[in-house]
Length: 627
Image (cartoon, rainbow, N blue to C red):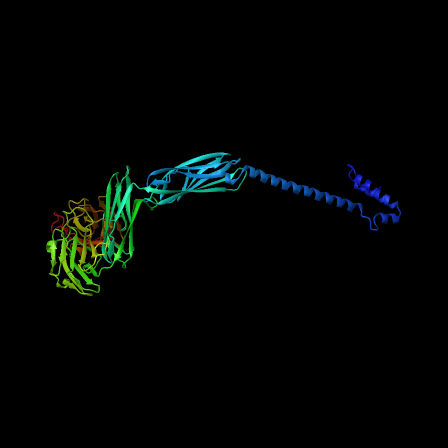
């Protein structure tokens, strides 16, 4: 059998390898040896097994090559089809709306999206980002976190468009720039990748319904008193609620006083609700220091506090004061201090110090001292010189009063002192948070006035705060007390007698916080647990034998405000108390914090005995202990 015949038989359907090998071996064996060598080129002939393995190997490689080509063609086809069906540049998002907006007024913006691909988009959402000066009217279905809102869209069909409308308010001053930013996130159909498209839209705040004007001095000398006047008006048709004016002072500004008083610290002023077409103002006074030529900016904003405590501004204005140098210096103190709290009936000693710090003499200097208060008794003022103008509440010193003021040489200084008492009573003066504001000034015609600036007059402001007027009284009773008492009168050794102690508090001028009364009882006296009225909070510490009346916040109105509580105590006299009037209370101490002066307030009352001097029915024979 020749090789061709062998090859044909290899491809027959029922060909057996064993049969080929038998036939082949027989045929070869029948031929001469030299023919065998000649037929195989002198080499050892291959076995039928090796020929078969070679053929199978070649067939594997052929099939593998065909498979690889097929995979490549499939991938290329899929990529080509994907390119035909989806291209990310065929997905877009845009923001449409007004370019100029009014502060605090609702504005409509449209978020328009487009898909011009041949496949759907899944898990689509718009992530809207905005500044803190923008308040979005969000839907319940939207997820809001800080200054971002996620708006779910769902699916977008092939070759379709859609739109989401949002409304919100921008807050800020006229001319402020702001912007909205949006991101469209999605996954194309049959794909796990997440794609996104970003866009941005800028707006300008053109008007504000809350107008704001700020007046500040153009120039001031270091240490001078400056006044900032803030005028605001609701020019819109709607009411603004819970409005605050917020100040950002220069770093060298020292707050002295304001009208109205600050609601938070010294820089936030609550002005409440502002109805349409209504105006108001805030006036702030303080001292300003700095080097000559320095510019001291001050910024005032009007707005409200959000739920997270951040201040949202409707409008804001910045003004600046340029520091100038005055050769005259003036300062003042009261009772040798600049931080003073006083009380009714106290005497205040004012000291005014002035100096020429320049290098030339100054002629005809005049010192003035203005009072802005209604709680001083000017009829008892004591001064060595000067004139008091009762219409203006102003003290004036000229060279006729103090000859040194005729020519104040370089480096020369002087002092003026006087005293004035605080009124003993102020019941006829309405309001609370009383203070004494004074301004000392010195001027000379030899001090030049820079062109375009205010005349440089050295000044200094000082405020004295009137502390709250607190009165604590303790009265003991057996008869006709709010709580019925029991036990023998006079008290008897070994027998219990109860007594009522009434604590009476009055407060005027300032609100108090953390108010309480602590009454120390002798070790032989105990608290029965009875109080009147039962709305008050009274506790007893048996280890220290102290009664604590926890008052908390104690407000002060225009008139005197009072609080009362009555507690019952019990005593069992011992043999050593015979013919004595034992103590029912050692002392009572009231303490609180004055919200206006920011100082601790204390009042103390002494002991109470069984003598009960405030009980008109108690006789001298009724309070001494008997056997």
